[in-house]
Structure formats: structure tokens, C-alpha cells
Length: 222
Image (tube, rainbow, N blue to C red; front, top):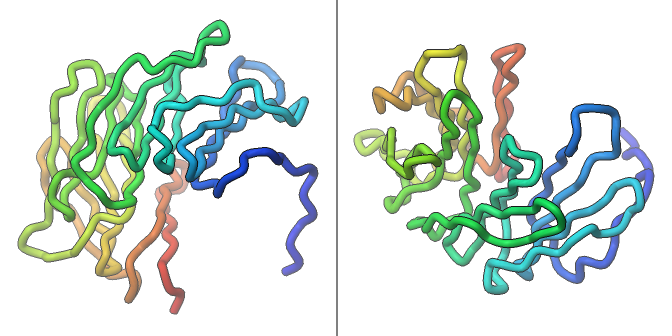
């Protein structure tokens, strides 16, 4: 298949782009904002209409930014960097200040996953390489800690947090170094199912909530 031609290019970052996230600030038709995280530790906030940056955020001490996500508030952003920090940013009224930080124990490249349900939850890699923690952002308390110790799946590579329906336990899909995908019940910290999908580490995955289907990207296709 011939790749589609781009509508336009955004230039001027001056470093490798490691993460991207779209967000629309208002609940009506409008050009969305595009957040990009780079290996220089900077986050660029792009106005897709003008094709220029509205702001540049600098808070990860020059270390690579590899996960970005907007919170329910239109002016609140989270970012995860190689400085082992997850920052919450206040972007209201032109500000670009870090208002809160969470330390990360993992030195791997696993990106966090955010869930906006009754409580705002954040899934993040744990201290052990095969461990995932889920915390309540308001209280900073750990509500679940998943680690397939007996199954020896290897390092956590990618995670996706979601909730099937209101009042039920959040579920967590984890892609591991050995090529397996595991489904966890967060509140019970229970391994619900495991399937071997690839012969190589799984680098990314996502979940289709409408059709209850998952998608994963291996390091090496086979």
C-alpha cells in the first residue's frame, strides 16, 4: 500500500520525537492541540491550525519524554520521562508549571496508562521489572500490584488500563518481554488469562472498547 501524503509537517523540535498525543480543548468542532515529547526532555504544544507551537514545556531535566496524556481538565497534562518522574502540568491561562510529581522506580521504557473512571487511576511500571502498579491519583495510594512471579513473563513492555462497566473492577492488559499478553483484575490483583502472541517482546498494545478487541505490535514480526 502506498503511504498517504502528509497534509503538512511540523518542524522545529530539534530532537527525536518519542511520544505524541492529540487533545481538543473545547467540546465543539475545532483544530485539536498536538503534544509531542522529545529526547531532549521538551514537550511542544502544537496549534494544528497555525502549525506553530503555543508553548514549550521543560521539566524533565533534559531526559527523554516518552508518554504524554491530558487529564479530564482541559488544562491539565501528565508526562513521563527518563528522569524517572511523572509530572502533572497546569496549562491554564498560558501557564506551564509542574504542580505535582510521582517518582517511578522502573528504569525501563514502559509507558503509563491513564483511566478516568469514578476515580482517576494511573497504571505504571513497578520496582520489579515484571511488576505493574495501579495508583489512585487523588490519594496516591496503590490499589493494585500485579506481578506474574510464577509465570516468569519477563520485563513489562506495555500496559493498557480500562474499566468494562461502572462499578466493576478495572482491568489491565500487559504485554511482556516473552511475547505474552496477560489480562489482570486490578482490585483482586488476579491473573485472569494469558496468551502467547509473539516470539519477541511486545512493544505496544491497545484495546478497542467498542468491539472488545486488542491490538499489539511485536518487536519482530513473524
